[in-house]
Length: 504
Image: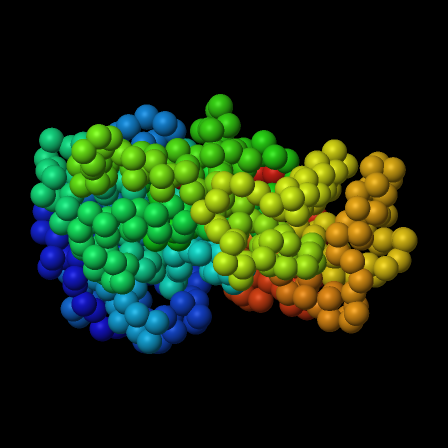
């Protein structure tokens, strides 16, 4: 890998240099060939294994852990930082530069008395979800590899350590800006330095002045709204939407107790530490805005006016809902087969504005139709992903729908389906329409029980074949194959709606 070191060289004082602690008997558990293409297509040989496991130095790597703060479950923690992640630098590839980080590489100055290690089960889950979301076209960080070892680590019980090799277009989080606004060690000068660096690296079309800062924050709002719209459309619950887990470029980031929905539940909680449901599935859009408000507060030293220190920031925040709805309607419109990518509004019209908070009549009706369907799913205890996969089998002109057979409330479904048929209208080429539905409604998602089955095989037998098979299925989630039939089924009773801990 060829590295550059822009963050390390230009932002001294924003990190601590720290070297990984070697792990014993490192071995490849998983490798993503698609992620490797992003950074020059390195070969998964023994030399790279020793470098990424921290056993020998990687040529050109700088090794550092970033400092930041963040709001965790609503409460502000002044100093967090990379407690178990060490960044080597930015690897160069045809797709640009990607940070390469080894997550689980040992203690850093920000480990807060922890061992800086990741257990194998959490490393495997992060590896799988990073690549699974990418295959679903959800904005996300990536995972190059997961590396196992025989090094013992202790959580509730003794486990073995592992490393996830994460690729990110940036590791800059909302919490970085909070730290250099609120920390006694921070200053307005450093805050400006960080914002200017972020703009030059990731928003180079913008200027580093007040007007550029305002436009930059508007774009961050839009990118965050787009990411969360993707989450809601595929039924993904992040589980820990703290501000230190929010990427400044709107990529899904820092996976802990995540989950895809099995049976649809608006109030589904996947994190057993989330006792009040703050990060429940249906709360994610609102938490996205709350986190953006915390970021806006951190930016007030740079974006101010004569009268109000936050009028431009508030104006940007006020675009969030419209941006979220715009992207959500486009994504759900594709899943349902509605005409138009944004649920019927004219995206090319000069009068159409994504910044408007007013919904068109068609948008409002589409949101109602979508909501009625998810309510039916919840009331009838149906699986979110499997229900949408059925749309690729519908004969939209027929009064009988194969989807109907899954519902207990037949009258409720029939009323909804009549309205749905009217919304879709005439379909000239049914086969083409059905294929379009299959192309955006996945057959395979990373259900927690599937990940757990792969983890158990590794733990008990040292066998990673199920992990590799699951990875292959998730890499092409819209294409059904007989060999992956097990992955397209509803979970067994023990695997339904698993709730996990932060160490997962």
